[in-house]
Length: 134
Image (tube, rainbow, N blue to C red; front, side, top):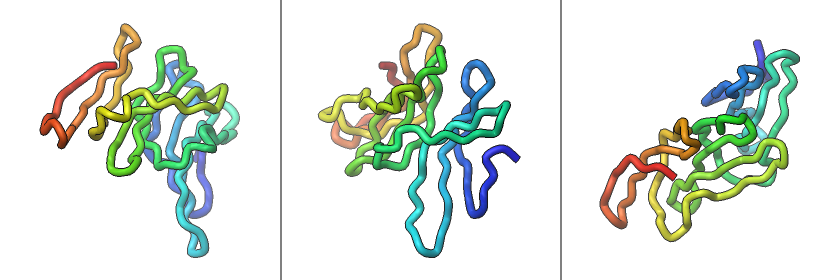
């Protein structure tokens, strides 16, 4: 099985647009160490696993791939908010997309045909829940 490992979970699988790569949130359980989920890419032809966004100190939740397969859009809990991030899988860089002052919790990300990212935002400050696009 691709991505298999002892005491390891591969969650939220998303196929890249070209079908050659599977993005997963990978975590390995251990009685000696706290679980640190990582954003990992599994090459479907070779089974090779590559971790991306190594410096991202949050538990990623995969939303969707960019149409060109160069970025993954994820959410992650940061100080009680759940912003949206773009992960450049080549440069291993993470960029926050939603602005910090907007707050809220974002989920259910999908890349639209025009390249915008759609999702659901719940914002207690404004007491709203809405489908939005960036």
